[in-house]
Image (cartoon, rainbow, N blue to C red; front, top):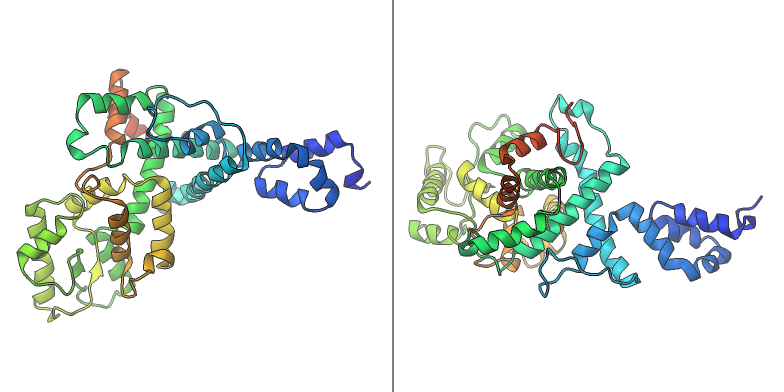
Length: 374
């Protein structure tokens, strides 16, 4: 019996049961009869597939319809279904599914945990996408030019941030923390590695080299060697204290002009500071939303596309800094993320301990995957 000979109700049930939007489009394009069949119910069928592929859609819709004209904790009425809205949902949903694909390798890493690595179940993937949408919404609302470092501890500002998180139980806040830990790992190991990480990778790649090249910490390569000019340059980026800056410059100069015989023009490998400076770099970079972090992860890893425009000799770090300069400003520099401290504030209001929640997420007892290490 041909598929086209089935009852219309059965065919519509098949369309409504498809798990992704591409599968709906593929089936509808197989023949004119199927294309005509769904023409009157195209949007309902597509949104059912979107719920399965990108859901939960209410959180995604709340994200893509957010703007500053209304407090973020007040939910807007759901807009009518349309192709334009679906296109916006596909953008954020694609990012959420990319993070879901990366989650197993980031969560279960190392010799022992990698043996337990597996793909996420459909329920776990749905929880992860929900956490991504909510963390993304928080970032859009509170990591912007309207929220500077000077205002972050003001009680009205803290309460406004807490209003968004209060409706969600601790288990769902733990899921958001879990996603933030994953994004931090991408920044820490792939986008903005520390000096120590860069050196370890260099030694693993060149085990026979007696002395590693000096680390370039972001200072202009062809600029004057004046210490003050170097300090002024670094002070433009992220958290930085004069003491830390002087230490980094001294370490760089000792490598450059030391016994190794490397001159000022020698090749350098690029790090984002020692452990102290690197911590503050990560805090600043975590103000980027999940879409921006995944975009940097893809393009820094390949060293291609728009990051290379007009930067023929730029390395990965130069490209990241150029990207940050294009979207940042004074509000971005020396102003770390606030999601963690807002979760701590909400958990404290409920009589809980933030350290206990963090420990449960790190141990895998809470988060996207429950009992991940059990």
